[in-house]
Image 1 (cartoon, rainbow, N blue to C red):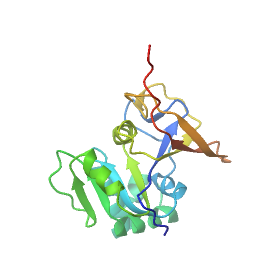
Image 2: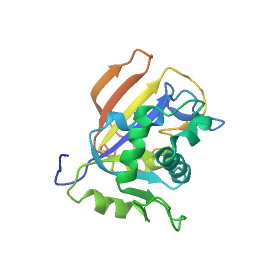
Image 3: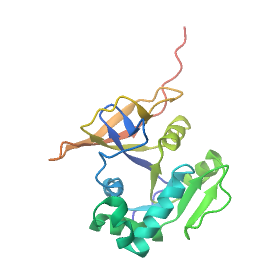
Length: 204
């Protein structure tokens, strides 16, 4: 695992072609596996999640880790090998949960961080890449705060028209540098962008 003078924050999100992570009913049935995001990343030494996403995440991946057969009914299939591997890696890797409302978490390697400045201090420490799992509100907050280094997207060939917009509510423009792109046989496109500094304010 490569260690750098400061940690690199990388978000990996699965979105529709029109930029939504979920439709207006809160569904994302176009996603084959939530483990695919981790597969786009180098080895990481921490995961970061928002409070809204973490409780369901915690239940799901703990169940796969402890007894994979229990989630077969939820998924409508047996867990994929890459989902078993995700559960193993997640169980062994520290999780930081950004929240001002949660008081405790059951995940053994998880801890609550109260604000973005605590995440900023964590990022400044030497370490490896950090997986920003989501949700979309967390990713937008990190972009606005200048904390996100890379954005890796799995873009699905689906248009839903409304729902949880990945970039809805971004405060300031950000320019992105395309680093890599890959089309898959299933029609998805994997994109990697480097998030650059916000451009200077326009002066009249």
